[in-house]
Amino acid sequence: MVQVAAALLFAVAAGLGLTVILAMLKNNENAILSALLGEGAFPADAAPQPGPASQVITLRRSPARRDASRAVRSDYTRPQLSRAA
Image 1 (tube, rainbow, N blue to C red):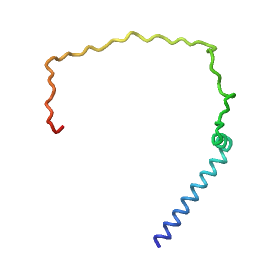
Image 2 (image 1 turned 30 degrees about the vertical axis):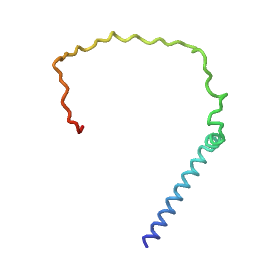
Image 3 (image 1 turned 90 degrees about the horizontal axis):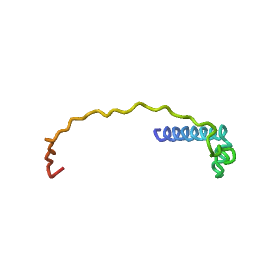
Image 4 (image 1 turned 90 degrees about the vertical axis):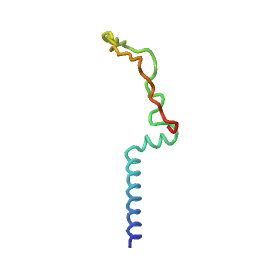
């Protein structure tokens, strides 16, 4: 009885997985098939071409950075570790 239930559950899971794969193919058929063929989803001639920027955007300068002062401790000793560590 348990084996029959497990087999039915496996069949339902396999059917659901197949349904999801077919739905993905239906929605993105062109992109998936072109990627599988090695062409990629976006053809190279339709991609943006590199070149000089048409407009230059200048960024505003940030205020000068102030470093926080830190206390210097010269009496720092390393803790002794056991040889097992």
